[in-house]
Length: 291
Image 1 (cartoon, rainbow, N blue to C red):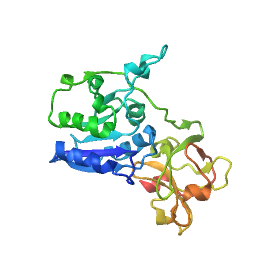
Image 2 (cartoon, one colour):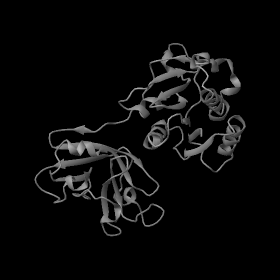
Image 3 (spheres, rainbow, N blue to C red):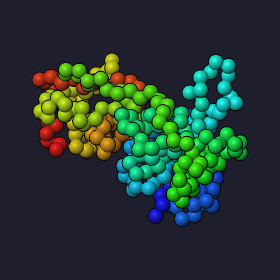
Image 4 (cartoon, one colour):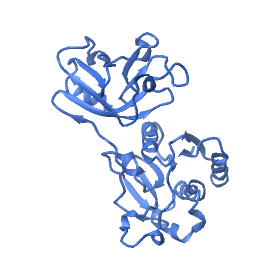
């Protein structure tokens, strides 16, 4: 079964996603379409990268991912005097871990890869010849590229190989002798606070070192890593390592649509700092108990 995924900032209020899927059915009628998210913040390639990367490893080899976020091309005829050529934005096809990602080189690729490198990267320069593809790229361009990929058409027949790509800024944790300083990189629909701190960052300090988790200028410290949300009473704050092994802070049974999720109750926003301090006080709960 051929799987095609869709990630976009189109939302579901309008007909746009339906139009994309109708074209997809016309061009690849046997493909199985899966929506990653259509509620990406408009033009936010970093959020798109986070959403897709978080579930990418769960898809089988050969899956084709279409990312329609901030994907309109910026072609040579638009260059202003003195503007560098690296301002140009072309559609790209990235091969990574046996799967394919079709997107624009707008910073998404670097945000998605992090420290990884693609197995191969191709630029669809021929788009310069097809102005009918310049608008609504997800529908009018990316689906055609996906059709070529699924048909196993040689990439060099319609693309050119490249090695350079743009990299949107994505913060990485600062790790010191007794401290991790990370950032809030995502707030989900429940108001749960997801950070760029991984379980492996904790393990650098040993499995039995007490710690506290705190936010900048706030007093909602947590000194325990729980195995599940229900490890604490309803309405209490809780820290877990989620399925991606990222540090996540939540309110058990809390949600922004109801009594309030963690980000509303704690006043935490995207990009803010989260500090994990290791020292001989705090929780008796040890990381080794989670193994």
